[in-house]
Image (cartoon, rainbow, N blue to C red; front, side, top):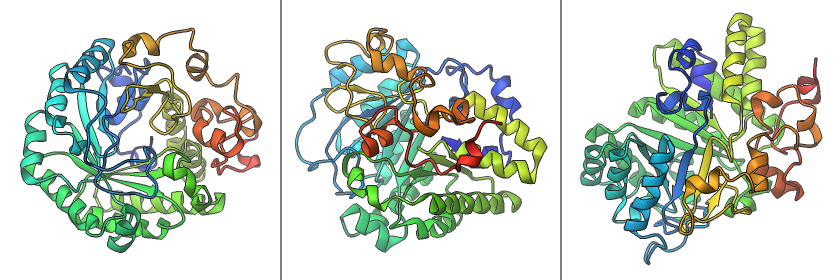
Length: 394
């Protein structure tokens, strides 16, 4: 994650990361990417079932009716292991996590073990009662996906009325006192909707928004031709920075982040280098703490069937199964070659990545995109929009 409001506008000072000691168990959620120990945030796709039919679903979700492969009891055993291991956050995702009747029970189990519990949802199933239940068990955050205005969102989600139900979910979270934010996946079909999302965020006083760059995974791999080109991506990142600065200038301190393209970090720094060199130096230090893409290190994924992956988008590679072996043993197993390599990608990346001066603050960006585009795990990320001149070592 690249905190646009934090890095570009200075809403959180660089000294915060040092003041908190950079240990993941002590850092607040908004600074976890700066932790030194990088205990992984674990995304658990707790079900493949979903009530919507999103065109860009990385999980290739299925019908909401049916059963799940991991029982409540097995899930609690998994959570116990993660908590003992020191994973700071459990992110319940899907499919749609709210189709599981035991979501509240499992979120409560995670918080009782000292983990922070968050959910990623389409929002349509968050009733006032469900929002209150989630608040009562100590859920830290609810991320609700929106893809634009009503027409565009409903077309993406494949179900008419999903936009209005998602907004109802946002309001129900707010009324229950749950922190709620928006999630927006950028592509050529909806990039023009970004101003609407900023307007909506301000109108509804939603405190946080994450803009996700497209990852070529699941149904999203079918949208590879729908991804923005490099110039379009630069324009979108500039737009997000401009709108964030406008909010900040007007005293609207919303948290704005971009996700899944770590070229955004150097791009923010390059812009600040022209606008505010002193601030740019502080931001560069924070970006070094961040270390860019953290797949296989600072983030992990457990799939609906127990398989362990480097992140939720990259399912081509399986490191083990938590139904057979605890996550803690799998994650630290030095005999799993790819997982070991992902802990330090620098010796392995190729192409532009290998010679980029920002490798230490980008981490080689997304391996899933490289493999999807070129069939090579270690190829350069095709979505990197920095120019050859910008990445050339000085």
